[in-house]
Length: 170
Picture 1: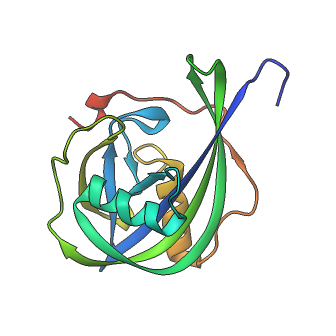
Picture 2 (picture 1 turned 135 degrees about the horizontal axis):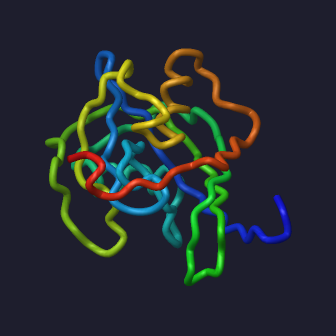
């Protein structure tokens, strides 16, 4: 980190949900991962546990109810992304990741809109279609975990990160 960088730390809780060889992802509508596939999950609200946050986020972003199976671990990413209201130039994204299982609900291709909603819809993405050009670093990390059952130990600094627009999926 150099002295001109001002970091905002974001803690989020996320879930890896698989059916056959497909991973549940959302189309991201805001933030540094806009226009890419991302894991369902996100900000832990006040007076909410990590597990409660994952369950709530899955309902809000994908329309499905899940059961938490296990804590996969924690990974983090250092990404250039300005938040002018905070006066920051970068995000330190800390992600707590769980393995989850689908229980019920209908996958939402057009989730309810409200302030803070950043899902443009959810779908099952074949694992072999995941890459760093179309997915957030969380999805890429989830793909690696699915293959090895290990997360990266070191922070991943993504200085060349490109922020797309909402129309990247069209």
